[in-house]
Image 1 (cartoon, rainbow, N blue to C red):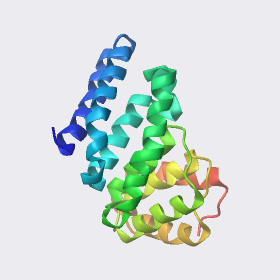
Image 2: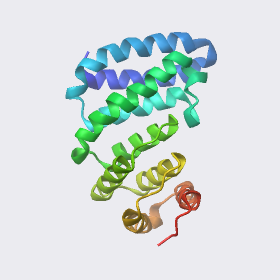
Image 3: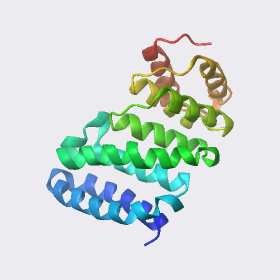
Length: 193
């Protein structure tokens, strides 16, 4: 099975897990292990879309705010946190120049959702590329939210351009995106430009 189908399979597993609830936790962990064994040899061929999709689906399996141990079980959960941080994120960062805004936002969201943190350098690289990608309001909002959720701050030189990019899309932004952006900036203790 190629990496595109494997990426889709992880996303479908996330949906199946949601429907099955707690009774499917053990089966979900086993299936994710099997999918990961198939994905690993193909990581080099994955594009940013597949890498961010796999990471997003794993983040959804983990639940919100890093509750991976409640969804997949302690050992499996920490294994998948390591999978994201030690394999998927580095592969994504190697291809960052080809990433679009949605891929970057998905990656940031997934790392935050897994309860993980990025280095200041990684955060700056991702947000810089987000600006270059002509991201939509949702991608900008979700990215700023993710940085705040990780307990980090948007690098000072990027906050103003990000807020300007968001403001330029304000007419088409949804109320939730506006609210999330304002919450994130306030949570980070940063002044709005």
